[in-house]
Image (cartoon, rainbow, N blue to C red; front, side, top):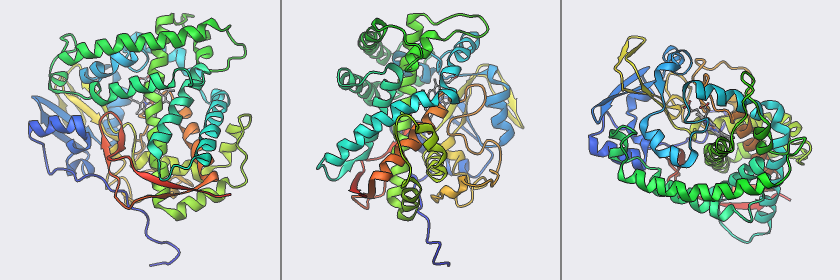
Length: 457
Ligand code: HEM
């Protein structure tokens, strides 16, 4: 073995079951760690067929099958009733949950506000908020540090500033409290959430409706603050951009209620996912000191200020590769799930109407046929031009018409914050306890892992 290439850090995952889980264990898994529903075969085969609660479930890993589901035949596949039940109370009828013509109108109207050319405007908020967090960490005596809490705080701060230009002194605590209370209890799917059609409310749906009433009071208050300020030209945040946005085909603008649903959609879809991406990137670098020093080397001479943030990104190919590799090993959106509205056939597989069809980035990204040494942390996979095993082997943001509309923003945010943190601190784990991924709606750590931050100055 070559001494210049020490063993890479191996990312552990929970053991996969040999086959289908009995129904009671399936129900527990979707509430506590849905990674346990994927059998070992899912990491080895092209298609895995399972059934649970009287429905068939398919996990697709093949290029053509994924293309069929997420690009070609999207009209036959919709968000599942569990997704709608769980997300509608918090994100309403915004882009994520809309379908058909309504979705096309929303997508056309929103996409320009998150296009690459808008990144300098958003990156300004990222750098501003990250600077404050880093100053707080530098002056704090807390040791060790709960990095997940730090990245969650920062990602919500960035979401709020880039949407509303609001600093969160006034609303941050309330927003955090509401989102956390929802996530802890109402965002987990229970038996009836999975079994009943959306039209029939479950007891939990009643609690979710109560949550929505309080949540909208808070969001309306934030919207009112922002609406009372004059419209800005040039725009300074997503609120300005979306208020001014028009459907390029019909000229229609969003109503205030639609604007509100887009705002909550973006806060919810964007902040926890990005916080987790950052957490995992930091965890990986803390576990792999050589790779961390390579990032430190790359960022050493780079100046991060709100005016040149996107230019700084061009100087950070390795840091961006670390973010990509973190999104491979721990994709925050661990599964993309659709319900088949009509019967279909994907390759040689018959899909009955009503089946659940999944592409699971967590599984796909660790598939033994698609990745060499799949559990090893190796950012160099994303440097240079080594071709992936197939076009859809890497899908942290999905693919096709419903690909994540915030992907550019998330990647910009994660790379900038990671670079700024590593420029300031050498980060190590405070314990040797393994950290395992756990997935409920997103992929988080199984415990709040602690870290030591040592100033590099
Ligand atoms: C690392 C961070 C993120 C990850 C891993 C992620 C992942 C995803 C994935 C996989 C989808 C596709 C779901 C599907 O096809 O069913 C999606 C959709 C979406 N994401 Fe993200 N996302 C991230 C950040 C963001 C941010 C920052 C925003 C907003 C600013 C955002 C807003 C959305 C919206 C609105 C959709 C629905 C798009 C549609 O249905 O047309 N996401 N995201």
